[in-house]
Image (cartoon, rainbow, N blue to C red; front, side):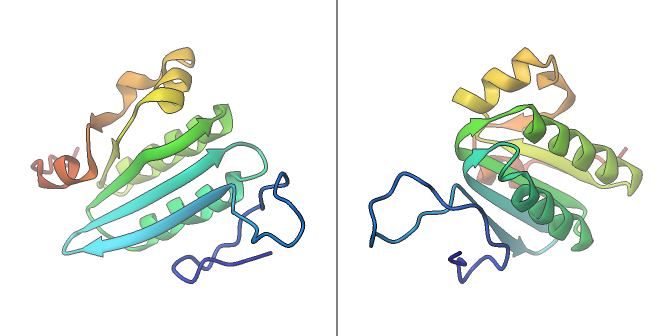
Length: 140
């Protein structure tokens, strides 16, 4: 299993690549911190096999003690209901700690599963991570 040098959490590798080709992770998460904000950039497919990678990324973001966590889903090509469950758990955890969790780049596959599970409106959503970061924080 290859590890991304920016991400210590190894994920499942793509099974469809030819022998000898470098293995591409099915899911990659990168934690970026700026001032009082953490942006968790998620790339790839979120399903049962890759859920532990997202869970660890969300846990690291929560453990950062930042008052604002933005989950950037712009480059997520697939999300199953397990991804929605993880995001809902992260949202509940953030609220219990009097912090905010926002989603950015919710489109395509992510929007589809949020709509299908009737959870779209539970999240504050922004077109980009940059817009989510500059919006004022209103702690509940």
